[in-house]
Amino acid sequence: GQTPVFPRTFGHEAGGIVESVGEGVTDLTPGDHVLPVFTGECKECPHCKSAESNMCDLLRINTDRGVMIGDGKSRFSINGKPIYHFVGTSTFSEYTVMHVGCVAKINPKAPLDKVCVLSCGISTGLGATINVAKPPKGSTVAIFGLGAVGLAAAEGARIAGASRIIGVDLNPNRFEEARKFGCTEFVNPKDHDKPVQQ
Image (tube, rainbow, N blue to C red; front, side):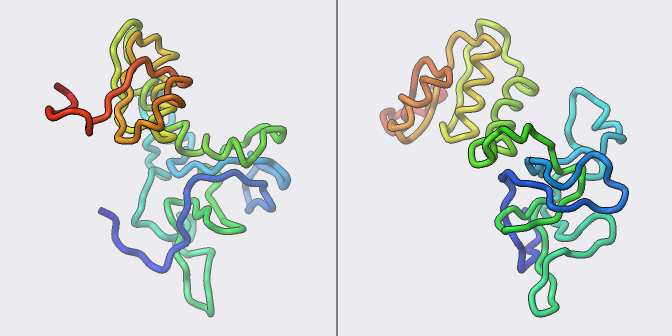
């Protein structure tokens, strides 16, 4: 559903080190280790002040916006022509420029090549389970797809106390790893003639 704004620098999941900060930025300093967050927080709007939403009025995910919010311009270019941003992060680059509200400061001892998955996959799956689905203790949960987001969702269901966590995936090679994240049983849709939910 996105408007095709091209050329763009894609990417949204990463870890990095702040090289410099813009005028008025007080939360970060050069050398800080950070994770990009494509659904940022202004910390001022009703959504940011709510425990029930992360859809910031200013920094919500916007695939159509290809420029910085402050001045409506891109920070990337080639031969004088703009290359547009992607979801406020553009992490498929050696350097990127982000709104301070789209950056989360982390412990510098955390290995960036490992914690980078916290900037999307893990936080998305875990957050969807714990903050949105909120499965009651002892409940049954089904997780469709056992990639990074699905494994994090299974971990969230385990933390919440679900008694049955059913992993659904077309690739049975993922089942053993998913058991480590809390899945108690598995369904491969290829093994059944009926729809999986039956």
